[in-house]
Length: 260
Length: 262
Image 1 (cartoon, each protein chain N blue to C red):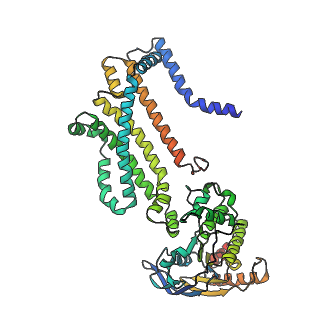
Image 2 (cartoon, rainbow over the protein chains, first blue to last red; image 1 turned 135 degrees about the vertical axis):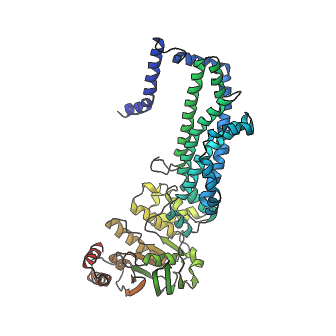
Image 3 (tube, rainbow over the protein chains, first blue to last red; image 1 turned 90 degrees about the vertical axis):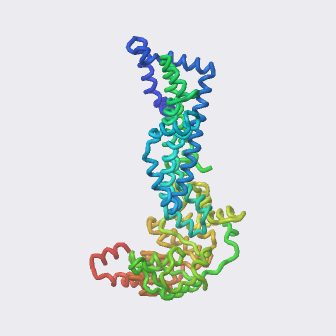
C-alpha cells in the first residue's frame, strides 16, 4: 500500500504532460496538425538530439544560463542589499523608497528602446534588462521581510544583551529569510521571461537566438526545442529555489525538517 | 544533576523604587510607586489588566525608562544592571530557527557556553530535547526552555511576566513548583506579575496589589514552603487578597467575572 502510494506520488505529476504529448503525436500523425503549425513530438525530439550531438545546444544553453545568472546576481544582489538597508533603517527608507517605487512602476520591457540606445545590442543590454527585472521582487520582499520580523523576538534578544551584528545575524536575518526566498522565487520566474525577450531582440548566441534563427528557416521543430528548453530551465530554477527553502527553512513546521 | 553550569553563587539584587512614575503621552500608567525589596525575596505583583503591573516589570527590565522617580537595582540604575536581570515573557519567545540548545545559548559567549546551556536544560528536565526545534515542543516545554535560557545567565533578578498564563492547570502547577525550586536553590530576587492570586500566594514571600498605577496593598505571605494549595491558611490569605481586588469594582457584573477569572 505505502509503496504503491509513493510510486503514484512520483508518477502523478507527469501523467497530464504525457497525455498531452500522446494526443499531440496522434493528431500530427493523423494529419490534423500541419507541420508548419506544430511538428510532431518525435521530430522535436530528433531536432533536440541532433542539436545536442552537434554541441550547439549546450553552447547556447550555457550562454543563456550565464546571462540569466549574471543578471540575477547583479539585480538580486543589489535588491538584497538595498532591501536590507531600507528595511533596517528608517532614514534609508525615507531617502530611497519613493524613488525605487517610482522606478518599480516602469515595466522593465518598456525600457528596451532606451537600453538599446545606451548599451547597443550587446551583452550589457541583456544583463541590464534581466538585472532590473529581478531587482524589485528581491528588494520588496527583503524590505518587507525585515519589517515583519516579530518585534517580541527582537525585544527578547535585546534584553538578552544582543545588539548590532549579533542581533542581525541571530534574529533579524533568519526572521526575514522566508520572505527573501519568496522574492528570489519570483525573480527566478521573471529572469527567464526577461532573458527570452532580450535574446529575441538581438543576439548572436543563446536559446533566444537559436529559436529566432530557426523561425527564419521555418524550422518549427527547433523553435519548439527552444520553447521546451525554457520550460525545463524554468522548472530547474524553481527546483533550486525550493531546495534552498527546504535547506534554510527546515526549522519551519511547513518543511518538517530534522535538525542538523 | 549537572551543577557546574551554575558556577559560584550570586546574591540577589536589592530593589529600591521611589516615586516612580511612567506616562505614555498624557496617560499616567504608574503614579508614584515606592517600594523596597530585599535581596533574594520573591515578590508577586497582582492587579487587574491595565493596572500598570506589566509596565512596572518592563521598567525593572530596562525595556522602558521611567518618566520620573528613582529606580535602583542593587544600588545602580537599571541600565547598568542589564546583565544581572533576565525576563521571562508571557510567550516563550524562542527563536523558531534555532534548536532548543541554541536558544538556551542565546547571548552566552565563551567556550563553556554549550556545556552551561546543556546544564541549564537538564535543570528544567529537557536535556533530551536539546536538538529539537521549538515548534515540536508543547507550550509548557517551551516555557521551560525559556526558563533555562533565563537561568543560564545566572540572573540576580528574575522578572516573570505572567509566564504561566497560557498553560493548562496541571502544567501550570508543575511550572510553579519548578520555578520555586530553582529560586530556592539559586537565591535570585524574583518579581512575578500575575493575575492569578492563588499563584501569587503559592510562590511569593510578599504580594503587592497594584491598582490604577499605585501599590495599594503590601501583603506578606508567612506560609511555610512548600505550600499546599488546599491548606486553610492559604485559602484565607488568597480570599483576603481577592476581596481587596474585587472591592475596587463597583459594577457587580464585572466583579463576578473577575471572581470567575481568578
